[in-house]
Each structure stands twice: as C-alpha cells, then as structure tokens.
Amino acid sequence: MCGIVGFVGRQNPVPLILESLKCLEYRGYDSSGIAVLDKGQQLNVVKASGKLQNLVDRLDANLTSDTGEAIQVGMGHIRWATHGAATDANAHPHLGTNRQIAVVHNGIIENYYLLRETLMAEGRQFVSETDTECVAQLVEHLWEKQTEQTLEAFRGVIRETVDQLQGAFALVILNKAFPEHLFVVRRHAPLVVGQRPQAGNQMEYVVASDTVAIIPHTNQVVFLNDDEVVELSPEGMVLMTVAGDILEPKVTIVDASPLQIDKKGYRHFMLKEIHEQPDVIRNSLSGRLLHPEAPIELVASDQSAKAKQLLSQANHLVVIGCGTSLNAGLVGKYFIESLAKVPVSVESAGEYRYREPIIDEHTLVVAISQSGETADTLEAVRLAESKGAKVLTITNREDSTLARESDVVLPVRAGVEVSVCATKSFSAQVVVFYLLGIALAETRNTVDAARLTELKGELMRLPTQLDAYLATAPEPMQDVARQFSHHTSLLFMARGINYPVALEGALKLKEISYIHAEGYSASELKHGPIAMLDDTMPVAAILTPGPLFEKVMTNCQEAKARDARMLAFTSATLDDSMVDMFDAVVPFPDTDELLSPLFATVPLQLFAYYIAEHLGKDVDQPRNLAKSVTVE
Ligand code: M6R
Image 1 (cartoon, protein in one colour):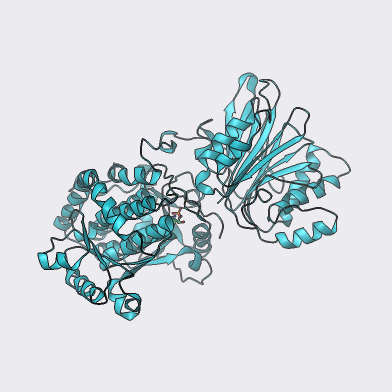
Image 2 (cartoon, protein in one colour):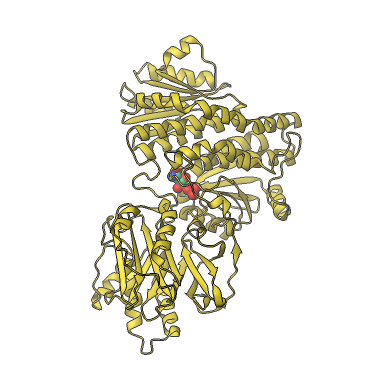
C-alpha cells in the first residue's frame, strides 16, 4: 500500500518519477505527489488528491528543467490513505516546517501521535493528519540541532529517527543540505534500488517500492533488507545498517520480460488477465509436468534437495495467506488431503500472526501470496519461523520479501497482475498446489500410479480446453451479468473442493461491483443464511458432477422454495426439470472433480467483471483497495 519513488541523476526527474508512479498505481490511488529540488535549490512540491492523472494535470511543465549536466534529485508518492482522508494536504511528500527536509513513506508509523505531540511542543507546525509528517518533522528537528551539519551528522540523524519510529516504513528522504543525495531506509516495507551506469563511472539511481517501477529504467537492482540505509549520489551507493556498519550492495540483474505491463487491447487489465489464464496455467506447468507418466519436477535443480527434504519430513502443512491467496490455499487443502493424505490447515495470516500456533519439526508452513509483500502473511511467516518452522512460499514474485525470507520458493509464473482484483494469480496458485499435492502423493505412494497419470493428463489438457471456453464464454455472460446487476446482495454456494470457489466468486463480486456477496458451503445454508433469502437475494450455485451434486441440487430447491432467483454455474448436464429451476445457467467445461476449480472460477470472474462493467465501476482500481496490502 502506497508506492514510493526516488531519483538521483542528470536528467529531469519529473517524467521518470511519473512513469514509475504509473507502474505503482496498483498500490493505491487516493492521491499522489512529487518533490524536486530546482536549480536555486528550492523544494518544489506538487500534490493532488485522486488518481495520478490529477497530479499530471496539475504539474507545471517548468517544475524542473533538463539541463543534461546538473545533478537532479526528486521523489514521488502514490497513496493508499491510512491516517487522514485523501486530500491534497495529506498527500505526500511531507516536509518539515522549514522546508529543509522532504519525505515520502510507505507503511504506518504506529507511535506517530506521541511523536507529533512532542514535536508540536517543540514548535513544529503540522499541516496534515498523516503519520508520515512526523517523520519529516522529526528528521528536520534533529538536523537543526546538529552543531556540525555534515554527511556524517545526517547519518546520525537518520539513525536517531529510525530508533524513534515504531511500525513499518520504507522512506525516501531528501535534505536540501545535500542537493545531490537521497537517503533511503526500510523496515517491514519493501524497497528496491535500481542503478543505471552513466558515462565517467557515474551512476543514476531509481528507488521504488517494487521492481516493476524500476524495470522501465534499468534491470540492475539491489533489494534492501530491514534496517538498511542507502545513501545515493552520482558518486555511488553507500549501503549500511541503521547502526552504521557499511555493507556491500548485492546487485541482481532482473529479467524484465515478466514485469512488462500492457493491456493488449483489452478494455481492462482484469479482462486481459482473465483471458491470460490458459497461458498462465501452461507456464505454471512448464518444466514441472512434462508427461502424464513422468514424476513432477517441483523446483529447479538447485533447490531440489532442500525441497525434497522439507517435503519428506513434513507431516502437517500449514497454509498461510490472505484474500484470494487464502482461497487458493483452501483448494490446495482439499486436493492435498485427498491425494497425498497429509493434513493441511489453512490459516488467515492476520489471525495466525497473533495466535500461539503449535509448531514442531514436522510442520511445514506453506506461505501463499501473489505479491509476496502482504504484511500479515510476512509477519505470520516470521512468527512461524521464530518457532522453528520451515517455510515453502508459493508466490508470483520471486523478487519479493516473502520469497527472500523462505527456505524454498515455488513461483506461480502468472506474470505481472495489474488489476487489483486477482484472477490469473489464483489459477496459477491452484496449479502449484496441484503440483505440490501430486508430488507429495508420488513420493508417499498414497495413490496408485494410474490415478496420478490420469490426473496429470487432465491437467495437461486443461489449458487448451480453457482456451476454447474463453473464446465463447464472455458474450453470453454479459447478458447474465446484466440480469443480476441490480441486486444488492448475492449468495454463492458450493460443496467440496468448489466451496473455496464460492468464496472466491463472492470476493470478486464484492471488490469490483460493491455488491454485497457471501460464499458458503451449501451445507451451511440451513444453519442461518437461508433466513436472508427472498426474491431480492439471488443464489448462485456451483454444480459439478460427483457425489455432492445431488446435495447441492437439494439446497437449490430449498432456496428456490424461498423465492430466491437462481443462477447455476455448472459443468454437469442438467435435465430439463433441473434447468427450469434456474433463472440462468452458465456452463463450463467438465473435468476431473479435483481439477474443476480451475474451470469453475473463470465464469465467476467473468460474472463479477461484467456486472462491474455494466454498473460503470472502476474495474481495475476499485475504491478503497490496493493490490498489495503492505500494512496490517
Ligand atoms: O499479494 P497477496 O496474494 O498476498 O494478496 C492477498 C490479498 O490482499 C489479495 O488476494 C486480495 O484479496 C485481492 N484483491 C483479491 O482479489
């Protein structure tokens, strides 16, 4: 949540900062702002509430000029509001009272109120309601107390500031006394430094919350760890611990291709990402499932021994995640328990991190996160690690904090997901759980080989079937979506391995259309939710052939008897009397029941998409949300 950018180099920083902020829009879009030092070394700050375009519209073309010679520094911010409404005043960058210091921040300063009181008592004048402003004020306050205003003294100021801050922060700090420098520090919030070599052994630097905002400028990056500080100037990068110990920066060359962002002609990123799912599944399977009769190759050879060891000693998997990732983890539970006979607990990270979990040497934590930066998931994993657990991470971002802190990483390979509403990453996560489950079943001999061959064959065929489905499914879905778009509440129900799909369908609808929706196991209907049903609250049932089909059909009858409008998402062939029960029937391809979530989820994503689009909602950037929830 919130995206920060910094730049040091010999070009106009404004276009570069704007381009990077554009890449970070998924992290928030409540307001944005930019600060640069002009030639007279005045701090120029422009901010605007609302979308990034409002800032672009407000920027004066002469904010700073491209001299091609002088060193220029600047910073930018895109905000997801925590403390204070989405106003111009609360937008970052924030300044000290004397405009000596400018700061952009991602995270939450938990003790901001106390700091603010103390600094106000010292005469500092606050102009915003944010927690961040206290950082700018504190840095400036400490700086003004220095008798010798040297670089070394400012290092001490940063150290002292960090010592006083509680919470999570990634900060870019500008001090007018050092007009060719930026200072960067992180604790529990992501931050990456990109370096771009220039003539004469000089460097340009771009700092950002995420590699996606660096890649347009350079592929050489340094990932920062907690409590590390970086000083950037054209002379180079000085990396040190907050305590002042100098460290050697480790430069990583990142592969730009999976990080490139393009709508490819689709109206929204979400629609594009839904349509990418067959290829995403192919990617996730690639190199891991080569032939139905070949064993699964779960990880690259350099991690293979470690992964094998972790998997062989585990007798309990604890899957930890949030939101859509949590739902994917639930599908994983049904699959792994059914096939590999290993008990799997699925835990909401935000709850787990404050529990006293029971962990022993046979517990394997499976962390699941698209972004790899979700604050609750990170903290839950750290708690488990502190109690001795080993961690296997399933993520779409191999360069994320979560991946770097894990013992083994299983990349899902969905490519950059821009839409806040997760779609293709869910499918990719589910595929990785399938591979994990099959790999466990293979090594433990829990299922006969013929059954595994059958499942692997089905899994390999699935992307082509999904391609065919996506070629025709969207058009009729638009009509179905219109029929249900005026409702204010909707209930999704399913059984077995598709119960998590009902949860996911409800989550999709809520987050992009703002229509209230709940997902239930159909078995729960009579335990409460049925009381809500009447002709204003439709029920969407996910029906797949199998032992629970009749049970869900009975629940549909019960809902129909309460006048609910009925919608079926089904891979079963319904006879005429069954079809008559539903106001609309949306088919999807049939497959092995254990694999059916990969098909069943897609029409639910399309349903949510077309309802939101019909209602004129901001599909890719729904209100109040951010893609990466980096604060708790
Ligand atoms: O990056 P993560 O997978 O850890 O994110 C978890 C949730 O914040 C995320 O899935 C969220 O629920 C999505 N907006 C759902 O579409």
